[in-house]
Image 1: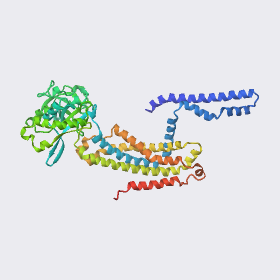
Image 2: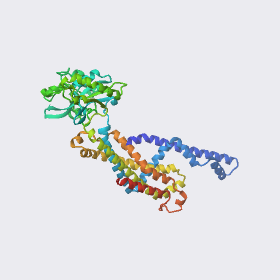
Image 3: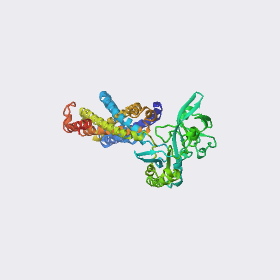
Image 4: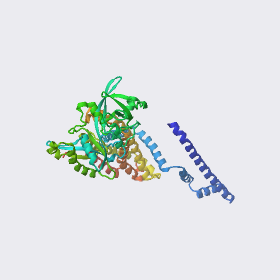
Length: 530
């Protein structure tokens, strides 16, 4: 990597050095020509050189301004600050280690909790236009209270599909564990039985072969018999991404099925924390369950129903329509003897967002995760306040250095930039360590919060989105604990400091800042006594 980068940058760096040498040579020749001209006018060489230099101006300043034509001044000043910051932190390893570990714990705790929140509460399904996907559920008003998010059945699904004017592409989905018979024995794999139009409604394209179609969802199967789609993960892990698997017949729950395709990479179904390896049509359910089949039982509720909003239709409009469709669906699907039961009449269809899928864990752990996120956010704020105090104390010991730099002409913004770069370097190192911390502990944290099954099924490794959030969190931390020390260091009084030893610590503004930080630290770390 370094050799490749060196081959690219070396010509640029050498070319710039040639420009610098040419500029210095041109300036020297210009001064010599001016000197020779003055000598020809009768002035001595020593006086001619003096007059030529005075007329030309400060050669060093002119050369620096000329070099700026081949430079990126802002980037190069930041790069110089980065190298200087590395040297300064190398001189204070105890301070650097303390700051990095403090940030790693603070950012790591936030990253860990946010990773769980993102996986369970925030992550969208990897499908086109996920915001248009909705879920239709049944809210049953029983004598013991309302039971929300209950599944439907095929008859209710078909009734809604016949009468809806706001939804398109309704499909049913039900998890099911399949038994795959192989040469090494029979093994149980997670799966789902779905409507034939499911993948078309979701807008997915296969990684290999084809996906299920409505033609596959008929009694006795479709053109290929009973068609099955496998997950991309299962295809890679179990069949080593062998393309010849398409068209192969396998025995699934004592019946022969044909693997017709592979689901797209990253798609793990619409149920969070469930990872189906096989997808088969709904009509395959009676084949597996026999007399215990629920597919054509009007009273059975076992299918989660999904749909897409029609273009231009809002979820509010579709929700209003569901209220009117409920009595129609009940009239069409239930016998007259049970339609007027109180529990039936008081129940209703509910329309809920489907962009993030559905999870049994979500209602149970949404509030605890949110409270934990707030708690670790306060912990991170305490870390930043403590680090601001440490950075302030360190800046006070370097005030002689800052005074000398100010006396030599360094702008206040330049000094402040230097300290902010140091803070950012510490925050990025702490953020990198925090990612490793979160990666190693999220599985055990989820097992502590939920159970072993949830910890095994929910993906909790930080993804790209989480890494970006961690980077933003690190930058925010750098600003929080670096701004105050940087501002104070850039506003020190130069003359009084230079008249004292660099080891003395001034009062004034810095003492005021110390008096502010101490109460804030105490207030954040003490519990609420009220």
